[in-house]
Image (cartoon, rainbow, N blue to C red; front, side):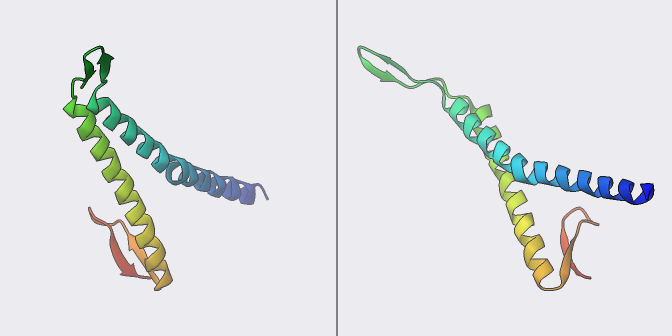
Length: 103
């Protein structure tokens, strides 16, 4: 009985971790990407002569685009997993890049 409880708690922990990473993690990365792009654009100032553009920060722009790339890769891997499962295959991470293999 204790052994079954241990298996159930182990499985619940894995589901919770995957839910946090995929369910909340990707939107957090997207929000950080938006924030990085805003920081990279600089802060504009307004005075009597008009609006002056802020100092651009290329590091913020690059970080924003990298975060967007991570989100896109996560979404594409999720879709690939769903489609592969529908065709009776599975997604394998045995190599450096993911591959679709027969079950």
